[in-house]
Image (cartoon, rainbow, N blue to C red; front, side, top):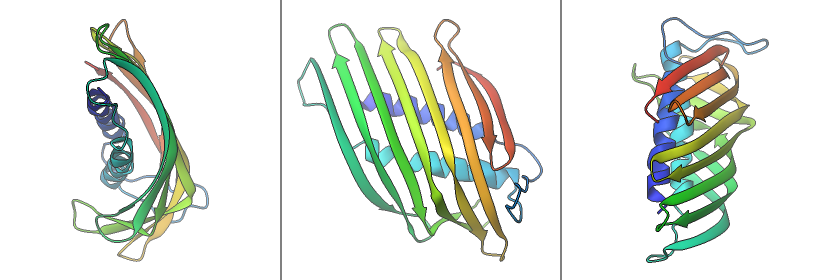
Length: 203
């Protein structure tokens, strides 16, 4: 039952990442050093959000259970695409009722990068180190008509270095919420000095 949750979360994550896209470069933030391009900001945000998926996939409701609830904590270290690793630590609670076709999920976790390398579309490698980490909080529920509520928040900071010798610090505070009556997800906040705003239909 919790596989559809993951698809929903990934869709919301992609929306949040796309809200950062655009032309030009970021910041820099106060004391942050050099700048990241808007394209790099978008790709890094996508990578940060994608890193949490494998941790959430570790909790699967018992096969055949029509109704139930479960909670668990997780600690996981995963390799990064261009070297280093990312640690994920948090907890999750889920509940489901297949007869009523309802379900809910709540999770809070920290994403901490340890010299975590990501290759950008332009071929450069950007390495992230948590300062100290990124905290993610997510609550959602579904009903017969699909997603009925969604609230996601990312806060925290990381230091970054590019293989051209440039580097700096990025902080983030991004929130996404669903208006269930209009099916619109509204996103607001900042990511690496870039204002993040957007409204997305069809959640």
